[in-house]
Length: 213
Image (cartoon, rainbow, N blue to C red; front, side, top):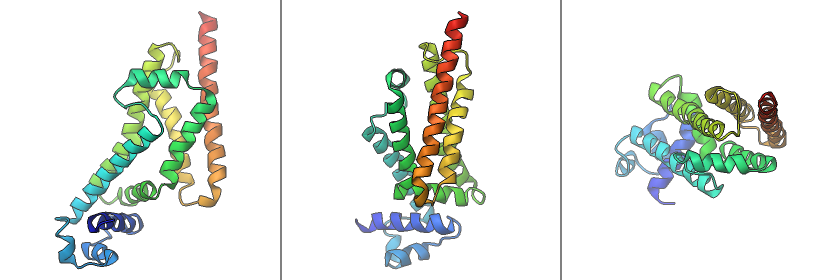
């Protein structure tokens, strides 16, 4: 790991513990073991470090998606085809992998904590937090469910309402079990129940619609 990468790692650790506003450039430099002047050779400001962290998180999220075989977020047809054909166990396994990434991956978990801590003190940080962990997630699920409804996989429901109903409990579980590594099994069981309940709800709705027709 080179000096620039160490600056990003140490800054993220400090931001996740003390917040962006509560961390100075000197704090970051001290954690890396360099002088302030040396840090400025790599980054012009603390804001540039923060922006680099956000970009790095986006890269890691994309890498995770590819590793788990998730379709491109802009290819809703492929995504609908995948999720429409995957088994219940496949959905559960995929949900667990994604959940554990955000819960246990060191960079991802620190990144989320940083945003949670700072969202009430910095409007820009709040916008990043809302954009990544609320708006983007619900928007993607809404488009996906709309495409799956058009394909006849789902019936008679509002795609956005479905997206919120699916995502909200998972978001809640992620926050509930954050920093509780000893409760990973409990967290996964709660996640499993939530996903299975949603899957059953979709099946019941489809069967009702088919019967009505």
